[in-house]
Length: 379
Image (cartoon, rainbow, N blue to C red; front, side, top):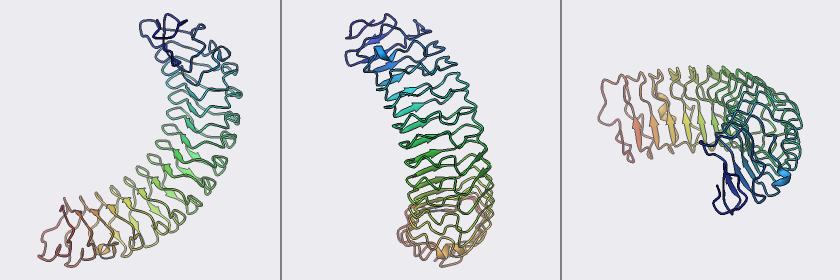
């Protein structure tokens, strides 16, 4: 079947702009057709019965740019010869297959490749140097595999990589040389692994990283020095871990950080030094912890803070509110143990627009309690 291009396999639909779809559920393929149009640029062969890619002949497809040829198939093996001649290939998607391993040399010659997706497979390890020839790669997606560790030489050669997705694996630790070569990295996703340890300096070479996802792991503590040199970091997600405390100085180098998420941990206390260095922070989540008392001055130096969420803790004393920065727009204290709010508690919060105090133990509110909240819109 063909749309506008001649010489199209009967099981595919081909268009004159080089797009080829071989995705017909009524004509399931177990190999890539060998009579694809020579002008093929974008090849889609997903939801088929492919078990390997040996029939992909890039020498006959000199213009092939994007190969979505393997999404949701049954591929169990990739040979090192499968991508010979594919030097113009820009995007390769081999997601949702049955790959248990990828051998060294598999990606040799893919010098133009910018996006590689090998997520949702059965990969248990990645060999040292497996990506060494992918010097143009910018996006690498390995999420939802069975990885338990990353060897120090795994990412050699990925000098252009900007996004690395390792979420939904079984990684237990990050060593201090694991990501050293990824000097261009902007986004690193390690969410939903089994991480219990991150060695000091593990992220030290990631000078351009802006987004770091460490949520849904088993971290009990963050050592001072873990985030050293991360001056460009803007978003840090640590929610759904087992953190019991945060050492003073932990965030010292994060002066560009805008959002910090510490929800759903086991933090019992935060002190004056906990958030030192976070001069650009505008959103802070510390809900669903075990906070009872917050030291006065803990948030005082966060002069750009606009959103503070402290819901579902055990806070009973609100004296810390006196030293909150006047920049605050939203203060949420739902589901705590607050029983008394002295007059003047909120006097400095002249920009506050939203104050939430639902489900506390407040028995009485005096007339002047909210008198100075001139910008308040919702209570």
